[in-house]
Image 1: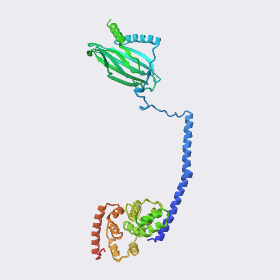
Image 2: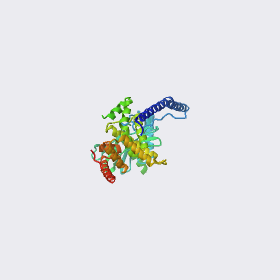
Image 3: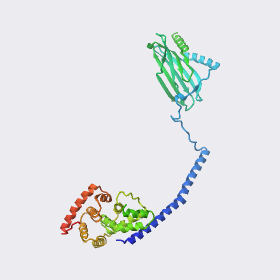
Length: 224
Length: 185
């Protein structure tokens, strides 16, 4: 067995060695490792900057997330008062639509929503069994998302009282870079209600009376 | 706070006399304990010295949850386990001769066991299982409680109680066969 003096001397010796090793490690870290790490980071940063400058690397693109999307309540639309030429165009469109669709009519109004060009469409149709009205907002701007809501008004043919109708289908979808939002209301013929007006929260309201006339005209043309 | 903890605290504060006190107080007992663990005095001596070096260089934190001796012995045991694990696959060199082993045992007896009755007890303990020898050493020679033995050996207190019972029984049989009469004071 070793004497206590031997053990104590050995312990002191090992302590000295340990301290020396630790100091060496600290010195290495300070003089070699840290400068090397800083140099590598700097070189990488300069390299990336040079690549970015030369166009080899795109600047980071911030993609819109669901958080970035504005809620419906904040969406504002400005529908300019249609000019004379536009009114002419609308009239043409109405007649065109009557020819195009056998038993439906629609109206398209161009406008802007949050600075994006959009088209509002109001459509009404009847197939003898039910009447169908809808309003649609269509954005042609890439990556923009639109949303529309509408209220439908009608009249009860039995009581002659006006009725307010809720939308029964809301569809929002994107296709080929375009975004669509459609709100529609279907009224069965048996309910004795005639849709008279579609009020979109973004677009101007549409009086269905003239559309109904158009439909009737279209139907009459069809019969003839 | 016991003396060992006091010495260690002084050492951590930069007083080298603290580690000297720890060596003087605990080194021999640690060698004895590790000898029971390793069955080799030379290895036990090396490991006890390494334990002191670990204490002095890495300066592990002593929480005071057990006595300083218990904590120190537990460090020694962990080093012994590492040592056994490292050398498990090594080809064993020249084994200690029987003469060398006897000489080692006598050295220990001379150095650490003053009481004649204890010497006889230690001689009888040499022939029982290493596991039994270890707990009996801690119980009778280091006067440790079952809880302390549990900390040092890394076993539960419950199993230490059982181990002690079996160890005492084994020792009694051994002493009977050697015609040794021992009454613990």
